[in-house]
Image 1: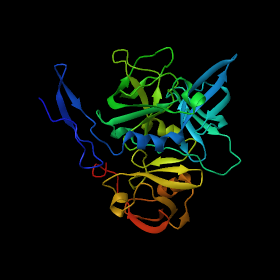
Image 2: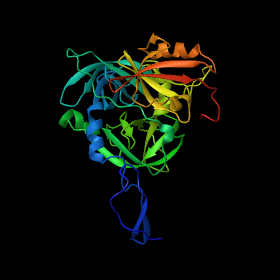
Image 3: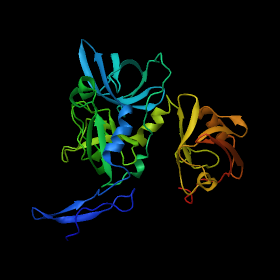
Image 4: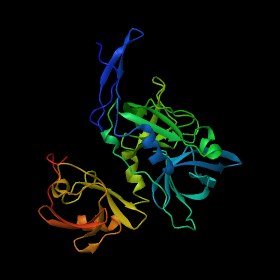
Length: 340
């Protein structure tokens, strides 16, 4: 089947799928004619949050790799292949050439997850950071990007390496290689994963973090993989507040996923639709400043409030939406197939 050649996407924000003329006797399918943004624009927004990492372990063994800042106060997500257990002299290389010290906040071998906390800086300026995406929404053929400290590029040149491709598979990885023992669900990508990019971000077309790049791969497919971010969110929540009442069981259902930023504010990451939250007009990016007349500065406080409510109760929420105060009232429902 032969289709028309590449053309400008008319709808500005959706991918257009077309088939290109025969090449080398085989039809070549163009999956990504356009996406929400040009790769260069996405790259420029993401790159301040991507860091190089070096550390020492044992008798002078040096490790290096990539990490992603996921909180304005300097919380970094990376891999155990970058920062082994009991690593010393952990250094973070941020955009602009600064080198900062960090300490391990969480180390989980099963999911190959490491969380680092950058030591507080004298200046009060927040770090650039990436939002956590929803890896369950990944579909094969969607655009994917990988970024990282390929061959020490961040340390040596202050340059974050970029790879672009598609999501090429979602499956359970059962191999165990010398450099990575991770077994479990992975997202596969055709975007390159070079030496030093492990621990770095796998990015979707919206510029959100949907996976942490892994050194393990399928010996039958030979493509890069990442641990889905939804697999890691419960672990991340042990260090930084996070809540999804679609994944947790509360007496009543709201339909939101929220994150705690800097230990001082709670923001909505996503609103599930249909749900009481979507019906009430809550939106991603809304800052929750109060609930049931109580000041809201942590996910723990929100969790306590939700635990005390039941189906049919009203949840009164105060929201900061781009600097404008908004009051919202939600009628809580039972979580059922209607909502999920």
